[in-house]
Length: 144
Length: 144
DNA sequence: TCCTAATTTAGACTTATTCTAATCACCGCT
DNA sequence: AGCGGTGATTAGAATAAGTCTAAATTAGGA
Ligand SMILES: [Mn+2]
Ligand SMILES: [Mn+2]
Ligand SMILES: [Zn+2]
Ligand SMILES: [Zn+2]
Image (cartoon, rainbow over all chains, first blue to last red):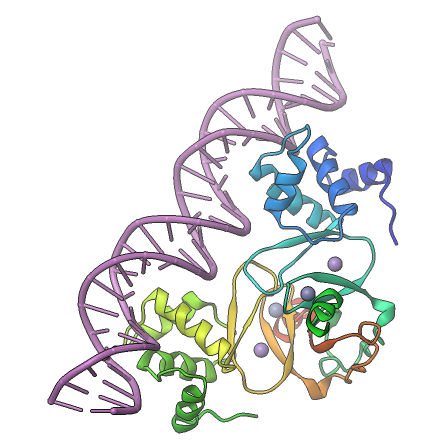
């Protein structure tokens, strides 16, 4: 669990050779409060409700910079649209095939796979699991 | 391991309420011979080297129809581009972070996760694992 | 063979993402 | 305070992925 205070972000960004601009902080702050795995466009719309305004190019530039610096993850699941999340802790994903909702699944909920043996002992550095099924609210809606 | 002979395809397509057109057969035949996880555009380019020609719309229509019918899988990994594969057997994926190569990893190479417990005993119907690291040929290129 | 609903097609359209070239902001130096 | 350089932001153009439309074609059953 990584806490993202402003000064920690500032120093890590500098270590990555990046300035901490208001736009960059706004995007990271937004993502660190969200669990919705928003698209770039959703982020832009939400941020631009208040000052400072960020252009579409800046949202993408910022997301790419934050990804390179390790603050943000991009995920691509079931369509050709990137979704973003703050890097808080390691987790997997559950995607509801009915409503598309993306749920985080903590690694502790999943028995770890043996790192060796995943691919005949060759260089697997990490892995992520995408689970699919019916989320709880869709399940209720179906069975009642 | 599902074999895709023409007559098997024909009957399964009919069962799915689909006509077996030359374009559909060509796409499925192409994918069943490929392990490259090609994009729709790559499929179109390769198919159109010989008759019959398939338009972009038909390639997408066909891929979507074959996905719905269960003959083809679409996967989205590290960018906003769909990639396609014939449904042959269940497997996971390894993606090389250096060259982007996508490698199939048979489920037998990975100790199965307990179906129960993946998400606090709730409705997980299936899961897929994406492993990342350095593929063998990039590894050789680096270490020699 | 004939009929018709399903399929294919070219090209327009939409959406996602990147690029471009001009402006702007931040810094250290004078 | 003014200058200059580097990097960031911007609007809008450009590119790329995928869908839609409306007309022409065709698979496959009668
Ligand atoms: Mn997540
Ligand atoms: Mn595969
Ligand atoms: Zn749901
Ligand atoms: Zn490689």
